[in-house]
Figure: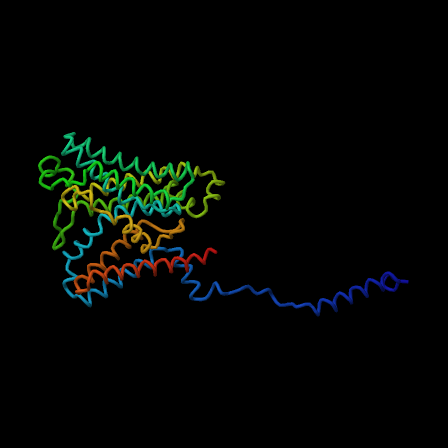
Length: 365
């Protein structure tokens, strides 16, 4: 008897036949995955998520086209564009500081108060106290940096929310500013006579039909510097990592508390530089100036595409956001629109920008 004719052989053949019958009944189709990722909307969403400055850039171009059609040659004149650049100089510089904080998933409501306090220290030390101008200038920078470090210590050591910390220090720094200045301004003539270096950022130079100030060049230089730092250094990559996921950043070996402290200190230093630019912009030292810089800087950051939840955004986007606000206000003013509706338009832009940010965040959810 052959092996195939044996009882064991017939059993194996029967089992094989049963297996073939079962496999014929099994669904042979290939597994299908959700192809929603390949729809045009989803592809657009992924592109915009990976390029946060794309939307602000498009909005800026559309705004220029819109107001050039409404206001005509007055809006398109090179002098008008240089005027817009001068108007956003202070907000652009403070916006650099605010961007660093927001990228760590924080927020700083005290940037305006730090800026004004630093400018008051520079002016008082140079004009009233009579210290050498370089020492007065460096003292203002030190004060701004210390204010930032205080914010950072409260956030890292006491683990308080940045919003609450900076809301409190905003009141404290503003009160110190009014106390030390005696609510008195230092006149432009006095600064020009005793410390002209403090007005250096307000010196204009002409390029064709445009009029550019040193302060505007300083703003563009800071934007370029911190664009490089955020994109090409480990310090910048750590800031993004911290804002995206603090726990993962800590597990990766990033000393998050020291990083946060450094970010707040640098932000305070930048605000002090903005205080110097503020003196050049208005020509005098005024304890009442720049009180809306905190909200204006947040506006520029949000409209510029930086996520309020941290980990996504860019310095270039903040500059574009500041320019968008400047173009809208300038274009609406040249079109004869009341200031009330200019603020209405800016507020609408903020809401739209946050709504877009929420939509883009669903990509990573």
